[in-house]
Image (tube, rainbow, N blue to C red; front, side, top):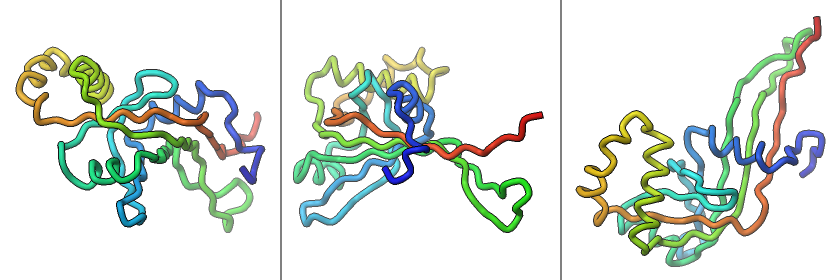
Length: 165
């Protein structure tokens, strides 16, 4: 990292960025080695395991079959501003996190249900009373992908300097 003063060193802080981001961009590699990245709704089960759901066929699945290695990136607190006393300077306040992992289709029924429950609980916590009904209707036609991190994620931030009173 070029700007070590912006590095986030504590794992809980880095994981918190992934947890708070409205989506996480997952970058895959296609069979022809071209990149394929898109924002997805991921949920995390522990410090090194993320899940997302998708259809049983399509570009994400094709990419995973060609190359299991993926990268994740997330950004929160993304706010442009001009520093006080310098209105001709434009900059951005942000926190970001990145990680590398291996993506694999989940085949175990119990793990698949657990992962879908994590995802539903993260994005629709008020609807969890209908989770069992949704699982009964759609489990067989829903694929779940586990991303297992292969190295410690990294984080970076640039925060606005606040004037003290």
